[in-house]
Each structure stands twice: as structure tokens, then as C-alpha cells.
Image (cartoon, rainbow, N blue to C red; front, side):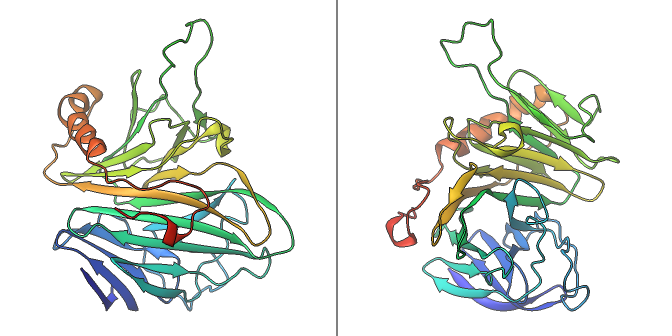
Length: 319
């Protein structure tokens, strides 16, 4: 395991985490952002837009990479993350902490833990409430990728005792969503979104299976998370979303909408798995034949971790 300070693109003082197979890069001068994720010696899976942190300091910037947002989307979501962050080294990873926002009294924190050997990462997100009021919100993990590949979400399946006469689920659409666009493909189990798109496109689903994926340049990125079927989720009940435009595609997961009592926090956990030498596909038939079996194997091989909402780091088993 390597944890070292490096320069990355235009930014000094970045932290590089690496095991024998994968590496991540997190800046210290702004964030919380994970700017780089990929196989050691290979390309960055994430898309990055370099901005100097001294320009338009009070405006939110599209740095790219992975970020922690707040749902439902509002001005609270786009609070600037241009200030330095605190970084604490942990066994096999780091914890990154933002300053408390003076207007909302909320504080974001992310813990990044690498598997000692495998191309797997556990990313735990927290939103802390340090203020005098209760907040109702959901943590939202957004990962922005280089376009040119295909985003994938599983569609909800009816429960076995469903009578077939009533609707069993729903999908969320935005005013700019056009599911008739040929960048979308649907069947009874999956939705694919091919990137890039000239116009914005977005779709959300109650993701009971707890995963989303992105296939690009022979690599299959899988994001795992927990869906609580009894909970209330933002965006018409969505726990997973795909967004795409001309410059990026995002695979997003959301936690439930919950109260954050005073001096408490909400937690949202993602696990990332990266597969190599995966055949690129253009349609659902070829996806089912060549990619879905790999995805199923990765889901079975997922390392075990607790998804409890309010455990401390010391209480949670890592692997």
C-alpha cells in the first residue's frame, strides 16, 4: 500500500493512494474530490476539468471526478468546495474532511479505503450536522466519467407475489430527459445510456439491486451501495441515477431522505470494483451475452462490509 504526496495536473499537494492494481488521487487544496481512479499505469476512469482554486473562489466549479453532494438538488448542493481540506492517514486509506459550512452548519467527510490487493475501494460519505436545527436531506455520491462508454442501471423487478395488475415500480425523468433518444436502450431488466449526448439526458430508478456501472475502453466500473425498500428517496424514489451530456457521464447513488439531528450525521457507503479486459458493447443483446456475466461475478465477489447508517469507523469491519 502506498500513500504519498504528489503533484497532479495543475495542482500541488495531492495525495496518491495505491495498491498493486489501482490508484486514486485526492487534492488537499480543495474538495472533497477524488480526481483520479484507475489501474496503475493506465488512464484515468474519471473526467477532470482543471480549475485554479484562486479564480472565482466563491463559485461552485465542475472539477469532475467523484464528489459528495446533498439531495434534493438545491443551492445547498452547489456550495463551493474550493477551500483546503483536512486529510488524515488511516490503515489502507485516508479520511478527508471539509470545513463546517458557516451558513448551514453542515460538514462533509469522506473515508477512502483500498482493498490491500484487489481493484476495489470502499468510499464512506458522511454529512454532519453541527448546528442548532434538524436538517432533512440525503447524501449523494456522484462519479463523473470520461464519455465514450455506456452507463448501466438495473431496473426494479416485481416481487414474486406481485399480481401483475398494478404497477410495481417507477422511473424518474427530468424536464430535459428524452427516453426516445437513441442513446437510451431499455429492456425489462436494464437501462443503458450511451455517451456522449448532444443534449442533457438523465434517468433515475429505485435501484433495489444496489449497483450501477460504466463500461468504457475495455474497463467495467461497478458501484455498489445499499437500497432500503422501506425508506423515502429523493427524485421520485431514486437511489441510483445516470446523467449524461457532451462532456461527461455520471453514475450516481443516493441515500434515503432522513433527519440529521443536532450533533449527528448521515452515512452513505459505496464500493467500487474495476474490471479489465471487458468487451465493449453497443446494445442490450451483446451486454447480456458478454458483460452481464462479468458483472454478476463481480457482485458475488464483492468484499463484505457493513452498511449501517450510524456506525463509527472503528465499529465497521473494512474487509
